[in-house]
Image (cartoon, rainbow, N blue to C red; front, side):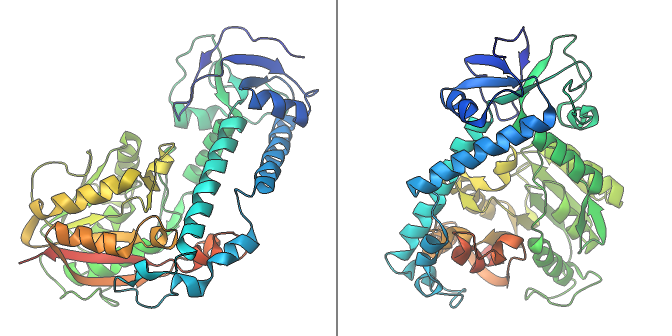
Length: 420
């Protein structure tokens, strides 16, 4: 069965345009034929069994992955080993500018491999994103063996306002909506809080939360919190004063700051969904009266603060979705603006706490000299730093072509102050 569908509304959270041509297909569609149509830009509106749609998408994805592997663009374990730990300089010299001294061959290999992987993922996402499903009134999915998606879609998209006209979305987006709903229901355990946070759809989730421990220890030391062991080098029990947390997401770091004694925290995020999510989490944790969450691009106003905390996107690159805004920062724009403007936002004894991974350095996307140069250009000095190793599964996956870079990654809390 292949024919053009009736009238519908198109929706894409990533802002993707609707395919120029959309045809209805069912269980008779083969993966090879589907791949050919998808590569031509044809949208396939699925009208068959839901589980068969997922199987078709998986089969197409395998073919795309195989094609990328044949081209050599995605690399492999053998190629990943070409960026050996010895070439990367190992873990030594973390505190200095030596990260720019890797051998000439190692960093370009890692950089090229990473950029090729990202390009291949973008191509696969665009291709698979043309496998479509139609959602009916009340966010219903009228396919055989389809799950109940109404609550998940309501959480992601809001109330149904489409009348009787169906809304067409990509199957990959719908799967993301369903996955986000499960994360929202289950929540994420945050060790430093002894509580769960509940991420909303489109909000970056703290699944890699080793950085929360860095902020927890620094805040305990500065504000005299209950757990003042493992300090970042500051004197304990300094006045909490005014505290700002930039890019709050779910509100995890704002909650950590409040728990460790910050009496008033302002938290900002450019993503309105994140602001709503953080407010809900902070109210649930009992910190709603001590943390104000507002929509802002970095700074909420021209005020000065005693502590400014920023956990920026760690990798230079253009984000392709709301979620990727928590990972990629085009041309390190947010990081560089933060550093350039920080001196005008600190009190005389204030500190900026920059939480940043050095993965970009291992991938050849940024050097340690560049980072420290931005500190100096902004009139900032480093008064302390604490490091931690990542605990996420990718850091231990030896089959990842980028395993060497990921296993050498270090996340640091840089304490920055005004150069006197």
